[in-house]
Image 1 (cartoon, rainbow, N blue to C red):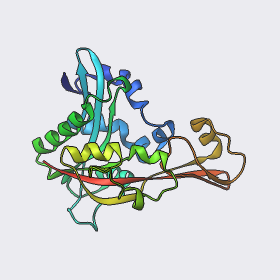
Image 2: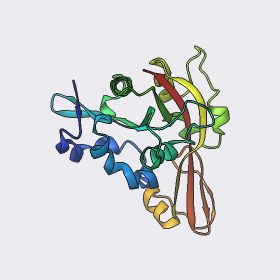
Image 3: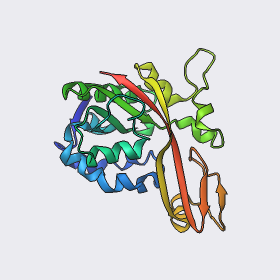
Image 4: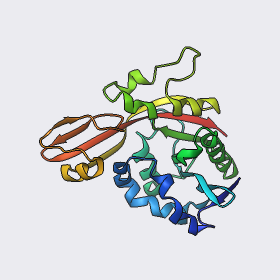
Length: 237
């Protein structure tokens, strides 16, 4: 297998569909992502990598250098702020922030996600960034959308490993939970857009449980608002 920069292989960007499709459709309508995603490939090419197995694109990572002084008070509130801070802050970047890791569905279980975390750590080290931080989206949380993230993050299995598979993966390669990000990503749009994205009819204002969402969708005044919770982990480099 071989890691390649998308900047060196722009033809691979058109082959990302099956990888990017691993995230719910509505997540592609996040405001900072819509504003800055395309700039990642030109302004931060060393941190946007694809993993090739022969000629097949099997996994990818996206990340961005961002300012953080290492204190709890200065930690970004989540994915949105970390991404926005990377492009709008006048401060020098100090850490690498993970944005997304994707693996082909049929290749999951091969520890490719762990390999991509390691690739992020290598990139951070190469560019003299202090550490890697990640607003981790706990994938199992979608089964418990009414459970507050403050309780969910405390769940452990009998062997002491984390209840959530994605947090467990990060911890297995050295990640440490440092904080919660209860308002990591906020997506707001007309209810008609949410109906298109989710396939769910939203006939009136209210609170809706949507398959795949980590928390309920709130519709008020015909506007749907989803606030996704994440968990901050850090990795030394």
